[in-house]
Length: 581
Image 1 (cartoon, rainbow, N blue to C red):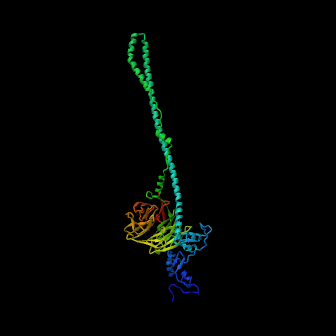
Image 2: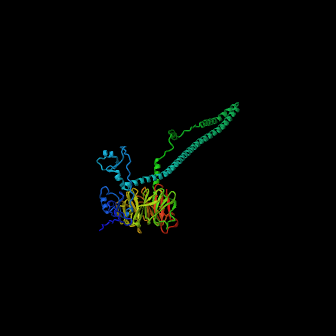
Image 3: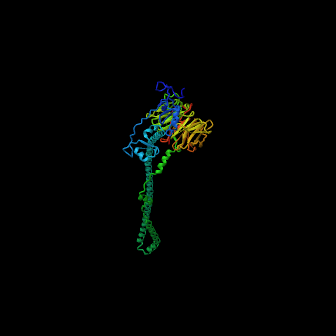
C-alpha cells in the first residue's frame, strides 16, 4: 500500500519516477524517502513536504521564515549561495577574523570579542546563519533601503540643476533690482538738484530785476537833482527869485531824500548760501548700504515653487506612445513616476507596460504582459508592480541597467485585484468594492469593506503615510475618501462638478490630484483634508476624458493621458505634459 504523497522508486537506490516538473522534499530525500513538496522556504532556499513544513514552522529559529506554497513556489531550486571562509578582520582585535554573531546585541565580532563581551549571550557562527540571511526580511529591507538612498540621491541630482537655475534667476533679479534702485536714487537726486537750482535761478532773477529797477530810479532821481542844481545856479544872482525857488524846492527835496533812502534800502538785498539736506548728509556720513539681501524673500520664493495652490499649468508638449506592435489605440489606465526622467504607463488595451524617457521625449521600453494591466506602482528604484485582475495576481518587475523590464515574483490575491499603491513595506490593493492592506510578501493585514465603496477607481497613500485616499465612482456619484488603516473614513470630497473619476495621485506636499473623466475634462486639486482648492485644465484643448495623472515634484511637471472610445483623434495615443508655474 502506497503512502499519499510518496513515489515508488525507479532504478534501485535512485530517484523515483516523477511526474513532469515534480519536486521532492529535500530533508526526506536525503534519507531516501521521496515525498512531494508542499512548501518552499525563501530564507533556507529549501523545499519541504507537509510534515517537514510543520516542524519548520514550529522551530524558534525558523518560525518567522517566509514560506511560499502552491503556485507561489519557484519551479526549480534557486542556486545556493556559496559559503566562503570569513576574511574580515576584527576592528578591536586586528589579528583576529570576524566569525561570530551575537543576536542579543545584533553585533558581529571575533572569538575574543565574544568571550570578553558576550559570554552570557546567544552567539552563532556567521557561516551557519549567513545563507538564510539572503532574501530574508532584514536583507530585503536593507536592499530596499539602499535603493531608496540611491533614489533620493538621484532625486537630489535632478533637483540641483533646478536649484541652480533658481539661484541664477535670483542672482539676475537681484542685480536688476540693485540697478533699478540706483536709477531711482539717481532720478531722485537729479530732480532734487533741478529743484534747488531753479530756486537759485529764481532768486538771481528776482535780484537782477531789483538792481535794474534801482538803476532806472537812480537815473531818474539824478536827472531831477541836476535840474534843481541848474535852476539854483541860474537864480544865484537874483535874491528874490532865488528865495522863491528855494522855498518851492523844499518839499521836492524832501521827496528826493525819501526816494534815495528807499533806494538804499532796496539795494540792501539779502545774500544766501546752499545748505545741504541734513538727512542726506547723515546717510552719506553713516555710509549706509544701498540695500540688503532678504533671506526671508528667498525662502518664500522657494516655498511658492513647491506649493501648487498658486500655480497654473502651461502646455509643455506631448509624447507619442503608440508603437507598431500595438494592435489597438492606447488605453493608458494608470501611470507612475519612476524618476524625473522616467515614467511608466499601463496600457490596458495593448496588454503591456511602456516606459517613457521624459528628457528625450520618446518611448524607451515596451514590455508585453499576459493580460491587460489595470494599475502600476513604483516599489523601489528598480522594481515596479502591476495588477493583473484577469489572473488574480500582482506581478513584480525589475528594471535592468539597460532600462528593460524583466518579470520576477508574483503575489496571488483573493479576487480580481484592480488598483494598487505601494509605500515603505506596505501594499494597498483595491478590488471592486473592498480594500486589502498587505505586507510585501502578500500576507493580508487588514480587509476594509464599506457600504461607501461601490466602484473603486484609484488608491493612493497620503504624503505622510498615515492614511490613504480612495476614489470611488458610480452612475449616481463620484467621491474621494480619506481612510485610516483601521478602515475609518477621516474625510470625504464630494463635488457636483466631479461627475466621473479617473486617475488619482498625491504630491509630496499632500495635495491630491484627481481626474474628472468627462469630455470637458479637468483636474480637481484637493487639500489633504479633502477640501477643494481649485480646478485646472477644464475646457482645455489638450484634455478630454483624462484617465491617468502623475506629478513630478522635482520638475513640477504634470503628466496625463486621455482615454475613451470616441476620443478626438488628436488626443489619442499621446502622453500630455504640462509645466506647473
